Image (cartoon, rainbow, N blue to C red; front, side, top):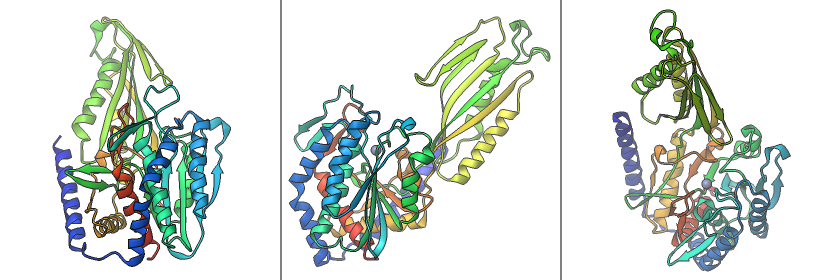
Length: 439
Ligand SMILES: [Zn+2]
């Protein structure tokens, strides 16, 4: 897709510029306090792995609230040991989600920093995936990378700051959600605490897994929205011999095909995707949401009455989303003779567009990494990451994601984590938090 290639090039250039900037600014030494922070992270490396194992061995699939709460209790104790006040944010029972762990330190020192993690995983109780399996310098298991490894990095960074006396008087809040993988409904309620915390924060750091591109660790300052649409077309049932005639019209399937083809021909642009995932058409159709299954009945000699498509829609800025939805509605409304069609949209995760403030934050993160001898951090193309919690805070604060562990196969049977990335991530995060809380 040519538009996509152009888009990639632009982002490649942007990250190259960032790398240059970071490289020229890389010679600053770590201060004494910063050196003590790094030493404190390194000293805890074996215990950090133990904490990870303890949290991973508790199954916490999103639909296993007891498990999510148990993992929450493990991390809650760690926050309290570091002088954070903590509470458990309950969700309404009808939401059928465990709720969130919230931790806070109140002070007046430097910028206000919000830390984001999640307690749940995609691995439900009946998962066949081995909970924890050490394989040399890697570990495989349920949610090791997504994102219990990230939670551990967050806590080890805070612990190192505490050990160096650098946590005193800082204003740091953290929320570890219990439903990141299958967000509770309604979304506004499920993320209301997070949004309130974002409104009183200067920066938000999210500890989802880090990515590597061409040997460089990458973080995200932009993520695309995630939402959906349903297209429904109706035709006049009749004998197939009359199709295309003014009386009988074109039928629902031709109308649906016209619309999908027009989307493909007219809408493609950088950072935008719209994927039709399921289509059914015929004389009559059904769809069951809980199983994502559709059926269709029809005969070749009957003009189709019903057609339905369910798709997703991902965009990078609110402006892009509104503009594209308007174009889609216009295309849908230009009906073939004898047909009608409607499209409805469902908003999920809001988009997190790239901003100058975000570029500034990733430059600080990259510099912290370089100063610690861990190399520069690049900016990940938003098309290379799915949606995540940091997007809910993006309208209110400056966010960055990907501060978590390095690994592969997130959400699959082979999800794994590079053990050394915990120490690396904790050093980088601790230095970044330290520097933000001195600004
Ligand atoms: Zn995650």
